[in-house]
Each structure stands twice: as C-alpha cells, then as structure tokens.
Picture (cartoon, rainbow, N blue to C red):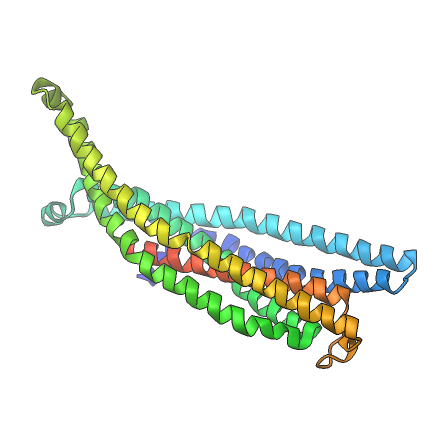
Length: 312
C-alpha cells in the first residue's frame, strides 16, 4: 500500500527532498542556538567586553535568521509537495473508479467513494506533510537536543532519562486508547454522506411526502454519532497536555534546584566533567523543552498516521 502511495509523488520528488534538507538544517541550527546563548550569558556574567557580547549577539541573530529562512523554505516546499501528492492521489483514485465493473460499483456505495475522494485523501495529504516535515524534524531535534544537553549539563541531563520514557509511554498509551474511537468515526462518515446524498437526490420526493422531519432526524443521528466518537477520542487525547506539563515542570525544578545548588556550593565547575553556570542552566531548560515538544510531535504523528492508514 505504501509503495502505491509513494508512486503518487511523481513530479513532486524535488520539493519533498528539499523539504527534508531544509528541515534538517533548521533542526541543527536550533540545537546550537542555546549553546551560543549559554556562552553569551556566561560571558556577560564573567565581565566580557562589549565587543565579545556584540559578536555572540550578532552570531545569534544570524543563526536565528538562518533558522527562520530554512523553516520558511521548508514550509513552502512541504506545502507544494503535500498538495501535489494529494492531487496525484485524487487523480489516480478517480481514474481507477472509472474502470470499475458493475460488480465493483455494487460493492462500493457512492457515499463511500465520496468519502475516499475527500476526507480520506485529505488525511493522506496531512500524513505526507507530517512525514516529510515533522517526522524528520522531531527525531533530529530529539537526538541533537539530548546529546547537547549531556555535553553541556553532564549529569543534569539524566533528568531526561526519567522524563523521556515517562512521557513517551504516556503519549503512546493515550494514543492507543484513542485510536478505536477514531477508527469508528471513519466507518460512520459513509452513513453521513449517504444521508446527504439521498436527501439531495430525492428532494422532490422528500417534500412531496412531507419527509423533511424524518430526513432531519436521520442526518442528526448520523452527525451526533460521529460527534460522540470524536468527543470520546478527544477526551483521551487532551490527557497529553497535563502529562506534558508535569514532565516540563519536573525537568525545570530538577535543573534549577540541582544547578543552583552546584553553583552556590562551588562544585559546578567539576560536575561530571561539565562546567555548570547560569548559561548552562538556561540552555538545559531550553533543551528540556525542545525534547518534550518533539516527543509531543511524535505522538501527533503516530495518531495521524494511524488514522490515515485506517482510512486508506
């Protein structure tokens, strides 16, 4: 199935590859920005000259602009690639439907085919966009941020050893329990589209036999059924937020408490071979937030890809 879908990329291979390249560059630059910022903070604390401060500040500005440009170019190429992929996929599906025999037409209802051509292809487009952008950026940021945290903070980075498995396990558990509700929704979209189609095609019959209230009730039942499943799934998905907040505040408290103790006690310069100062603590907080956000992104990718696979 995935090989067939990748064939729909066709003339949009170049934008897809450019997206991967610029996203990787953006991830690398963003991981080095806290490192330079930490050096700048330590320089200010150590009484550096104005020239040194301006040099570090100018370097940060250049890196921020470079990261912004890479992200903007990646967004442009990603939009072009994902929309082109959806266009080709929609064209191929429509072309395949035109070759259906009468047996196939009896097997697939019109409402089901409309759902495949609209909602399902839109989900596939979103999944492809996330694959070539977020699914590349998130793992790279996760790896680079963790490595840089261990380089700068030494044992302070061992807080990640606790929060990464905790958050990853929690996000995957929430997503796994929410997936059955999402799967049920796609099976009920056909019923909703079928209700609309029958009402539009038989509009004169409905009005002639005064069946408006019946058709309204039929549509309301189909729509409310979808609402209930989506509500049930969203109630589970929103549990990601408090879990994310807990891990974020735990990392913040641990880094600030242990780092401040090491600085005050004067042992920060020899802590596990890493120099711990105010700049390193600031960088550790930034890297911790980056790690947690990328785990959240990976959880969203998992949910989106599972929904798309179920729809296709």
